[in-house]
Image (cartoon, rainbow, N blue to C red; front, side, top):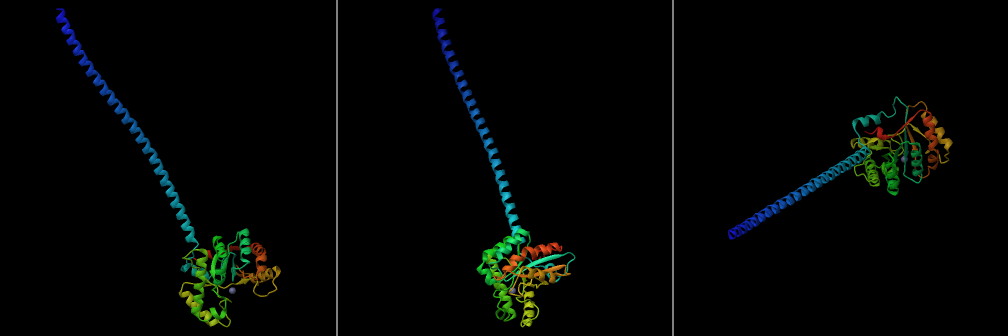
Length: 303
Ligand SMILES: [Zn+2]
């Protein structure tokens, strides 16, 4: 009995041991699966988090790119707005420039840039007035930085030819167009805008009369065919009339020539010898303001 019992015990022990091993194995497998599950969960959480961060970055990047694109588009629109485009409306505006229901004044400066131009630009800036400069190509080449400043500060850069030497520019109608183009090239280089064309020319000495009247009239037709308009003036400060200039003289001439006129295009000069014009400019602007004139430049006309 004892022996039998012993054998049964041994058998039981063996059976128990096997059972325990199996249980252990199951526990180990379960633990392993649990560990695996935990690892999978941790990893999934990590992936979800990483995806979220990636998504945030992508959104930020997209928004930055959008902002950059918007800024570039705005800059390009501003750049385009400063490149004159002459349409039929603009041509009509130029032809009817001396007629206006409201009082308006176009300050124009010929023959620059020169050593006095920066002083004129300083005054225009202080007074918050935009003007129009009829520049000479030969002088633009010498002072491109001044022309760039004019452009950057919103003034209209128009064309007065290249040489201002009458026998050269008025040799033929074609030479007028050639001087226009040569001046325009100089302006393009100075301001760094390859598409620039002011479409606006002022004949040295004016269009009307003089020794070269016929050539000038023919040249005017040729310019029109090339989409270039001309403009003279109907008021002035007299700074080309005498070498003995004074502020009082310029103001008196301005007063005389602007009488009873609603829309005035005022001829002035920023040639090297016209220091007095630069000195008189504040008072010229003040006088015109007191007379009720609003200041315009040719950006509002050439369109
Ligand atoms: Zn001139």
